[in-house]
Image (tube, rainbow, N blue to C red):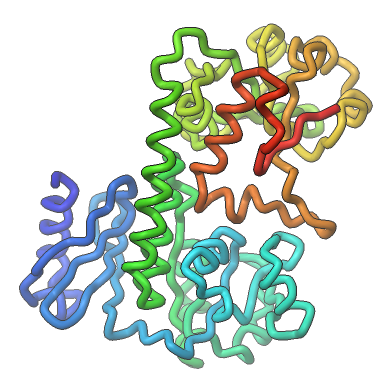
Length: 357
């Protein structure tokens, strides 16, 4: 309720931005984890509000989101996943790069020419994008804050929907962004139904290991060039490790994002780790050791407890961990709980992960 009171203040502060905001608010859509957007219901419409730095920065009314025949462009496989889970991926006519995507229906549509690559953020093929004339472009605030880009797209009837769910460090908060896509597509009830089930699954799994007295020590990632980037203790990855019953080797590094370390620093902290996950692009122990022979000094290599999230990676490199995995953190958590049990007989049905042989 604290957030809803906060949203009331924001709504009253933004009355000059939209006449609709002055209407009487009948109810709020429950947001359990995210504080980056909210949805208010009025008598004959609803409105979605984006929240940043303690203020409502942007909003859109359900009167502006008739998507029965809408055309959409997404600049992230995560956004595609949010549409996939509410059965709206057939609205996608443009993407950044096909190599980032894993969904079979999307790949089939691309192969038939129904979906066009329009480039990554900061490098958009603007002429192609303007020719597509999508109704909605789902992008980060980097694109939505580019005044020139916004004006050009508005000239062909395209509305940019800013999506910064990568800033969310709680796995369930990231997944909750499916409600934003549900709102835009007129499928908020379905998005709520899907999210509620995912949340319930996640909480049941989390409770199974919450009282675990002995937690395995978990290390992550691998070196790129001469730098070992590791996630902070308040990051998305660290939260998953904690909820899965693991103890993160850098739990003392109170940071939300990744930070660079030397091999020696990581070795000092993680040499005796029990499990190693998220080892960049590597698929076998031999590949790992070929890249850096000193990896053999780490306990998980000797104990064959090294895992990567590439089980559902297609031939072009599209990894479903960064697509479906973001909207299904319950499946990711289930995998990690099995991995952290360190019982190889309990790891036969991993969904996203492979053990490196």
